[in-house]
Each structure stands twice: as structure tokens, then as C-alpha cells.
Length: 61
Image 1 (tube, rainbow, N blue to C red):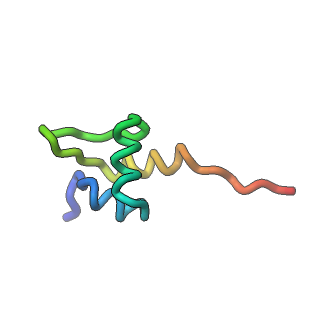
Image 2 (image 1 turned 180 degrees about the vertical axis):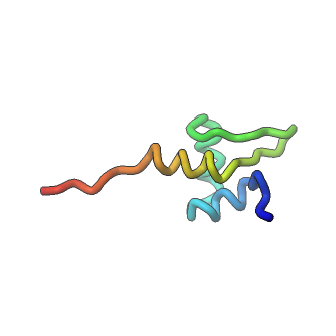
């Protein structure tokens, strides 16, 4: 059974980006997250929604 939430390091690996990028999008509130004290966690569904919201379609031309 996969976990319901993942941490910052796993989120960075999931999106193939540096940890610093994850911390920045959290700080700028571009992605939904859960906070437990000083721990920040993400749902893979929310990370997928973040990806979809930032998709740029290829142009024709």
C-alpha cells in the first residue's frame, strides 16, 4: 500500500526537480500541501494537479 502523503524529498523525486524548487513553490503557495508542525507533506494527486496546471501544449506552426 502506498502512503497517502509524501515528504519534500519524495516530492522532489516524484517531479524530478531539486528540493529547493519544492520549498519555493510551497513558500509561494503554488501547490497544495499539508503541514504538521514543521513537516510539510504532499498528496501525489495534488502534485499531479500542479503538473497539469502548468502544462504548456506544443504549438503548431
